[in-house]
Image 1: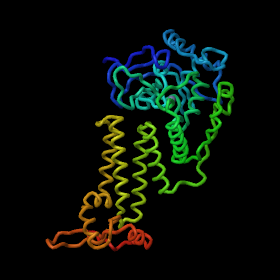
Image 2 (image 1 turned 90 degrees about the vertical axis):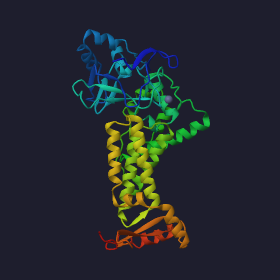
Image 3 (image 1 turned 135 degrees about the vertical axis):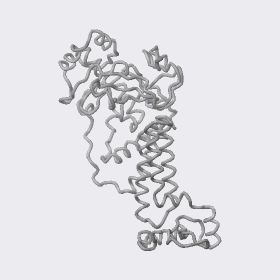
Image 4 (image 1 turned 180 degrees about the vertical axis):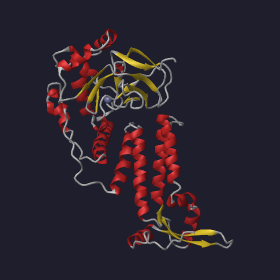
Length: 398
Ligand SMILES: [Zn+2]
């Protein structure tokens, strides 16, 4: 099969870059790259000897491929260590070097993602380079070198890239005019706080990175990062709903939409449904609207990123249609809102905010129908306060 990419000089970034040789759709595996070296992080750092021993096991061809890599400028004694540090990726106590993927340049608004190939290549420790949006023919393929960049300001990102990789990022997020940059920095700081909280951790202060430079970068307290502590108070369901939805919106505003964003919308919808089910007999219309909007966004993101017919898209569509079969969402789907609005205005109820789901009744034709009562926001609050949404017995199963 014709290759998805070609390696050629990157005029914008200097040095070589990896470019799309034809249009690449989201979800496409652009490269499948087995690791040539893998080191376990036994201590805080690995030693020159460990890197050398691992290198010595390589074939002559792989040795040449490794030695051709960019070595950066960090103050390590051996060139091998400098190469390894500048090109390896770390995860779960290991660092790995995949030679071809390490040739892909950086952007804080990437169009591709480096993913460990968990599915079928445990032995080779391969990574895949996967397109996360449509990449036009001739466009440079770019990944983000640091998974924490989503929650870092322009200054923090620039300091890290200069200190560890020796270049200044010129991506659209780093080259914003001042006003937009302040807005972007604020959003990224919020992303840092919310993503920590949503993962169950107290947010990390990142202010030390505002002063990071090549001299302080090798200080262990900078490289290891600070330990993260579990949340002192667990989030309530309402907080989980709000934080995840807001985080997803912020990621979209920062053009960082990815599979995680879709999952955040899905989880926000799930937590809101949990809240709705606490008052089974009162359907709050805005809640059903939000659940629907978030799930539609999640489906769209999965479809855009992984393809309309991918496993993930099919899975989330199936989950959504399953959820829609639940009592409240099923009713919401068939609720004739316009009719209800007109009816309740006529009765002086005002705008319909919720409906009280009553008992099943026989209508004139002898068919079973559901008795529902339109509620204004005020009426809804009163009923909820009185616990009417929870009362069993006001509804009879047909
Ligand atoms: Zn950037």
